[in-house]
Image (cartoon, rainbow, N blue to C red; front, side, top):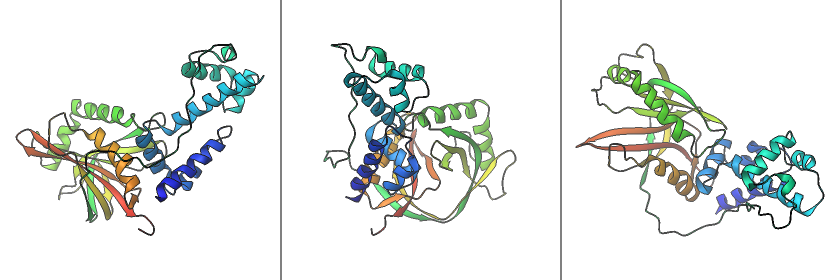
Length: 293
């Protein structure tokens, strides 16, 4: 599969430049996708953020250098991108459990994080149901925050986004959106992930624009016509959505094996009340067919 070749070529680039500044944009170009798509897919497939993988590989090689040569700690620190011996020593101890100066001692236990490569793995996983739909342009309204993904592309959004919801519930924002949208007190709102960048994206809690126009004190977001791959959590009881696992499977399983790629547009979590305390979330991902598919 082409994606395997592209991803492994990107890993070759990263491995060859561990003692230099690694250009994420260039790595993504080798992988034939956007920087955002590359980091996201890498994180969900491997279970570790790209930045953390690179840090571990550098510290693995640094330990080898200290064990197998007479390199000074300061020279090793600079070689692997650390601005000072102190910063290097802190990172080294965090991973290996000992200071760099102890790495040469006989019998000392160090950790080695192996380089990654991508292969096809046949597993008996649960099937993924999805549909491809064309959607016309529409308008959303609501409130927005910026979600940072610099430290952890895998877990950080699932911390910051619930915190944003909690704030919006407690300060009455969620109820104001419901009222402006003409929903009842338990009406289910939607969310939009947009303006994707390498280290952050915007996240809106909102709803479809009412016919009367933009309500006061809210932002408006125009959604252009787009093709979407739409996935469902299935029915669930309140608080048991499994949305984290669905996102993981979309990026870690569906994209690598599909004929589609991320179109770098707004994504949605559309939440529906199905009655009898049962709910469903649909994840809409903008897609385009891969060249030649």
